[in-house]
Length: 261
Image (cartoon, rainbow, N blue to C red; front, side, top):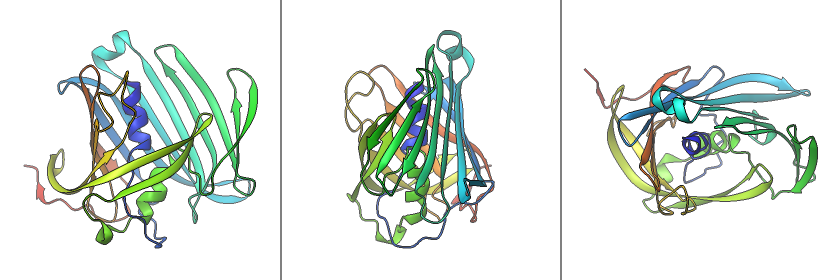
């Protein structure tokens, strides 16, 4: 359960990046996802919300992501996670990132400040009362800002099946290299009707949680919004699936191929 929340917030990425800076989202955008385990057991919900604000004199987007368990899963494994990112409205570079989680009693309370001039990430661990600094590569993103950065810079017309992108994220106390492969287009049935999508394969580390490196599949809408519609994860035991069930505040019209009746 806890892994699918991280997946929703980090793996809604795209493949080919263009020089165009037009934003794919706006102030007030909101998504809600429904999560299920092994195809039938409801596992929880997650939300993403965008707000324009100011941070230390800078005009930024503030994105808050939340995830929590529901139903039977909550009886034996309770999750309550909150992720926040403050990133520049023009460059999408993150300035501040917050991770506050409680996953079955495992807790973290981190606040990260990015200094892009010095290529540093300053990590404040509020739980253990420590402050550490780490070197970062150029153009580093946090796990939330990455989605919005690539979402706004994708060039749909340049996508070719098999294309890949590698990007750098800073997560907790380390730089994380991430790879995503484009699998082509697909029409999928959703809560809103049939929608034309772009299909991707994020690569993950095989082992205790995931069966293999290619255990994840991601679908996003083929329009200017690049809405994350579905994520599937094959786990070492069972599977998890996240589906978009509600949204508001999209910047562009949401294209539905065939409306649901």
